[in-house]
Length: 149
Image (tube, rainbow, N blue to C red; front, side, top):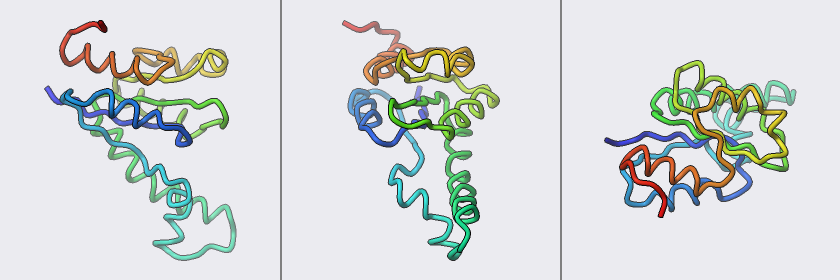
């Protein structure tokens, strides 16, 4: 059984690489948003033309990025959403809600200090992990039924 896993959220650390590397050998296909911050912010104006107003600049980028995000979430069996420590990722919260509305299995990756702020997001998840390795162990268990050694 191949699992399609969409990795959403924080883009400033290597958590995606940790999960992908840790899942080597498992039957998992990973997808994610564009994690190059500048490319993600500027894709709309780079493709559709410049905007003098920052609102419309951001709006064009958000719409183009939404095509990739919607496809990734729709195709996913499991959605992992990481909330980092430094920035408030409103887009990550949106992705978590969208995934929950689609009935996707949801794993939230966050730290204790965000528990209160994310309580509704955590309540929609099937698992709340603190470390990327815990996500790998969940994937391993779902695929193989094997516990960590």
